[in-house]
Image (cartoon, rainbow, N blue to C red; front, side, top):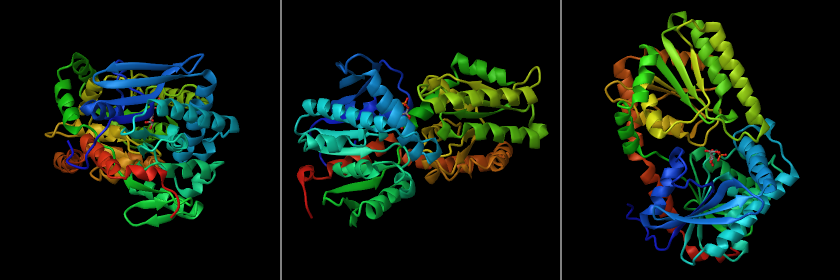
Length: 470
Ligand code: G6P
């Protein structure tokens, strides 16, 4: 618990995805928000995950938390979620302007759903609530709440990268959208690079100003704070789960199936930002360059399908099926498959056992806000015999985990070399690198991330919401 500014009133979390207790809590964010909310009660508001005839609101109280979730109509889902959020913002913010499919109807849907969220939320807010909005689906939410007269403290956290201003300006109506961030009291980002991008954009594109103490001033005079808050994991709990996982029958069976081979593991949503085709190619190069490794190593890639309504994701799925089939066809022997490619998700306990079994954690996104898989892989290792993390320089986690072998994921030869080095790394070096990374994860865990962001948010002045001029 933090000893920072007093936290009176409810915490109200808003995110597109809401993880109710009955849904499997995937990722650190869901458990983080649950921990923050159950600490002293609060409300979690967002999409129900369902498509329905009408945008109906569902209320539920569970585990000390109030959940309010809204259904989306087919048109709202397609324009806002599958459209603008995931075909314009997601690719652009991940440095893939080539994949942006901008349509005015999608932007209109995005604004329409944000307005709908704002109206429904405003009706539920109490004067002393503090609101915390998450991610790129809901950038204009605070501006819309302000328009409805909401004066509460409102914070925003972007879980994905914020790209350089040169890319942001390619988005139609970017001033309206990025400028809307000024309606928040605090904007949190994962890395200093993201913060620089935001400052540069406000200074050069919006004609705003930078004030001392991390304050940004929008041209209309409104000021807001922006800061770097790298998200962490629940390090102690993840490490504990990994220690216990060894006893699970599925982990025992899995280990037997390896027959003593060294395991390389990758775990990612099936998303083009994760650099999976390049990763497969790098692994194929490893087998080609180091024939002695053939039959001695096994690569498990877990890739649960994601956003199947978006065509780019469907194309990627086909591409990876072809690539995995090609590599297995070329190198497999009757008793050895080089790649085990699995389109399925697993409970956290099982995953932590896989991580602990793996000699190498291969995390090579082309861009990533943070990447919690990198952190979880490290926390799951056996301190006596830890594995090696091969990590993309373009994941936010690379700013903290310099004990990893850092690679450019587009340079498949560099990745293949890093894999060979990781597989051959002596125990002493593995321990040293692992200890350095684990120290970071123990110092900056999920709880300290929550405290740092919320302390900074509660330290902002609530009455500023109505300020103008200056
Ligand atoms: C990323 C985003 C999250 C999102 C998650 C899963 O981590 O930052 O906001 O919830 O992907 O994607 P989905 O589209 O299934 O919610």
